[in-house]
Image (cartoon, rainbow, N blue to C red; front, side, top):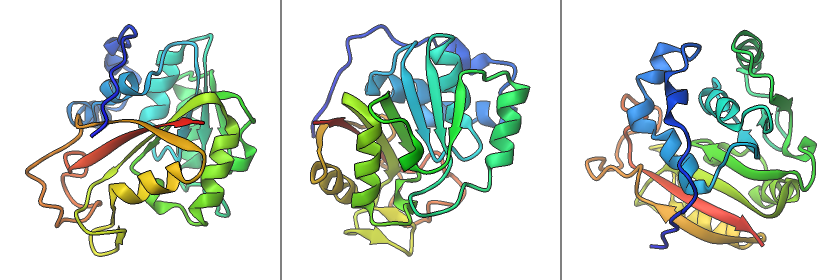
Length: 221
């Protein structure tokens, strides 16, 4: 295993207590370990970061608060070749109601501004990419600054490749795809691992945020 240890100042955990965050999201914080994930990826206030396929906006909200007035959060709502996430209205309402004024919405990866992003995060959604992932990775790479980082979190499986039965993608597939398309594996972390998960339940089942998950950090060559 490759392990990258960041020596930068840890991010401010007080953002987890933001009263504008839904209670159901706060209840997930101990298992999702968002701040630890961001620290591992080298995210710092003032950066331009992208939240890829943000779901209900859990990470969008936290990243917005952490980046502050000098930073930007690019919220990428659609897969390459596909439509926007059905949560678009929810995200737009969240931006307005919580005053996430540094968040900008984009549709496809090709719409992201080139050479502008310091760090991208993809949390439990890379497996759902609907187009050839070589094309997707190339477009994401174009949007990253030189030396920029993309972090991938997904649910682990011992089975090779894509396991339709459990809706899980093998970690080695992700490593192979990114390293074949202009990225270096900079590190991996065990902070989201769960040895009690025998990899038999589906990624949508109860315990979604306690399943065995891998965290990978790739740097643009």
